[in-house]
Length: 168
Figure 1 (tube, one colour):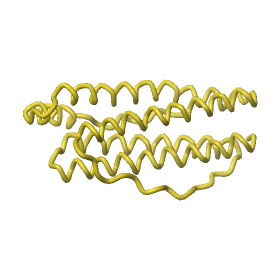
Figure 2 (spheres, one colour):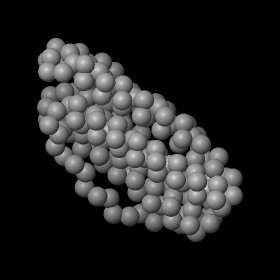
Figure 3 (cartoon, helix red, strand yellow):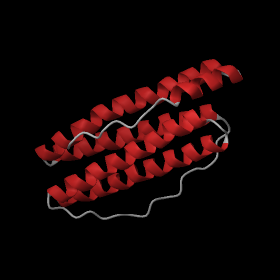
Figure 4 (cartoon, one colour):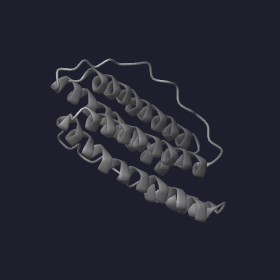
């Protein structure tokens, strides 16, 4: 495995694990606010991000690279309201999309077709991640300060379950 790609994939592995920490923090914020549905949604999101990180672990190992675990920064723990938390989630997903795109550019630069193929799953996944987050943001904006609307979306988000991970 090209050493520059290996280092970049290790950095991105850290970003995926940070994402898991961030969403777990959001889940606990919502649990503290008695918004169990939103807490559930974020817990599922945290689990997905950990699985995304594990995809990078597996790929690096399969390519005879070396996985180097790095320190994970502490995430934010307080938000002013659910809208702010979901806006942060959307902004974070946009950041991860930019990071994935940079990895694709790097893989193209090095003509690493295996890395390019691997990253295509993440490109598609990020479209879904951004769409899911912005959908909730837009609903929360429409709800505004209406408690009944907040409770309704909270109930809706309680139905999210973790899908079985796809094979890499």
